Amino acid sequence: MMNNVKNGVINTYSGLLIDLLNPTVDMIDIEDIARGLAFKGHFGGQTPFYFSIAQHSVLVQNLMIEDYFGNTKMLLLGLLHDASEAYIGDMVKPLKVHMSEFCEVEGVLMEVICEKYGLDYTAIDEVKSYDKLAQRMEFKTFFEGASLVGPISPEDSIKVFLETFNFLY
Image (cartoon, rainbow, N blue to C red; front, side, top):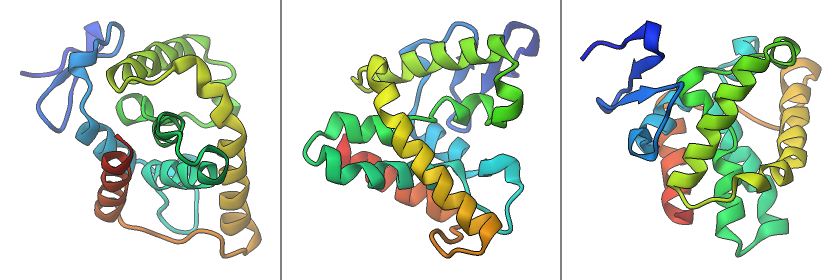
């Protein structure tokens, strides 16, 4: 079935339809999330090498391990903190702060994703400091010459993301 742009419905790689304005848990699939994040570049794609949102998500989860060792729900929330971007894309922060309707859609979608995987959406703020740390590491690599992260292909990003998800879930 074709997507219905006017009604906010898109097709996913797995063949599911997702209503971006009225998502439900049965519309969410982890493989669609992994693929969507792996094929979207972080920092709006303005980096010296390809760096996916999936790779960023795994980095955030890895940074959380020491503080949340044994708390698989929080580690999974770290991995999935940007999962909505698999469906709606990653808007750069300087624009996102001016787009309240986009942020509302993103929030509802994240709530549904958290419900699908048994996670506490209200705890997502606990991930923010790790997300910011990852972004600082990435920024230093991309724009200041540090070697803190490296390139991974979209296919390898899918694999690592799903392996991490399956280990935690």
